[in-house]
Image (cartoon, rainbow, N blue to C red):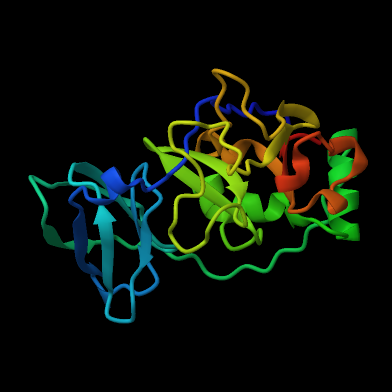
Length: 267
């Protein structure tokens, strides 16, 4: 299998609720997800480029609050159904209720397969697999899991799997930062107009062992947009939340906020 290419934008921003922004009106979207078989529970309803998502309950109900009053791209997905995409337009502060109807895909009979463990020939992936098996101080997502989740954004996959890692979204671009930076109770963690704010705690990012971002934006530079990374091009992801756990070869001057390592596909 040929080596893929990971495209990472150099644009990124922080979500910060300044007093002026906090007073801006917001909108909400609620409703129900159904299919030909009835209510669909456990479906993810998400809002396009914004870090907003909700899972439907046993009655197929969901609600998304504090949305921008704008034209929003909605996506509804669940395994066993085709992905549903729609658009909701807010003309002003309001709550819109919608019913989304999903279409189930044909279900094949269960087939039990047996496969050998992935054997990497590429040294960088051999090293990743060795660290993953050793599992000392890091958090890992291997190729098998990534293949099952193709089409899901990388931030969505990492949320909940990597403790302490958060993604801040500002002007619809996502970047990784340490969750412990600033307040966790809704207070602004950094100044939205100053990406070099001392209260910011950005995560260092490596791609195939090459430093892409050292955790401290230079003048005119922004943290990488992790939301633009295509998971179908990855063989592995690993994250270290503290400097003491980071492998020596991946430590940087500003890696106290954590380090994210992305490995592209190969054998």
